[in-house]
Length: 127
Image (tube, rainbow, N blue to C red; front, side):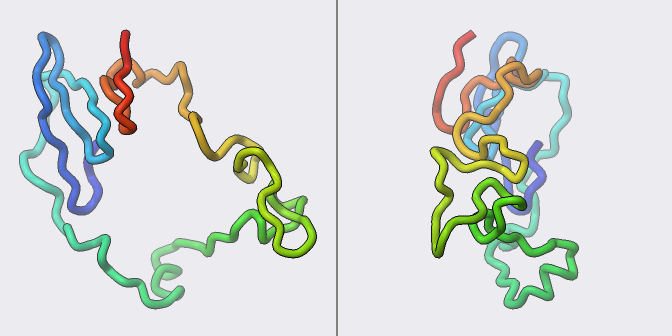
């Protein structure tokens, strides 16, 4: 669950059948007390401060350039087209496939919803 460079999770508390863990995103989740975990913090804390300097270095890692949707043609992206420097032109942003890209995009029937106690925005989920 917590594998990024320099990240750590905190045991937030214990319920009768669950252990509450606060993740780096701020979300509080329930875990089975039988689960195993490493104690400590993931190394390479300074990874986020590394400066790439040039496009070639990130290309060597396999990351391709990302092009903004508004810079594309209409047949390539829902944000494309328009005259001059035009914006998205929609009520909300979309992905290349026409799905919403902002707001509440999480599946309401997702299997892991039952183990989330508090979402990262601070909303407490009631059962």
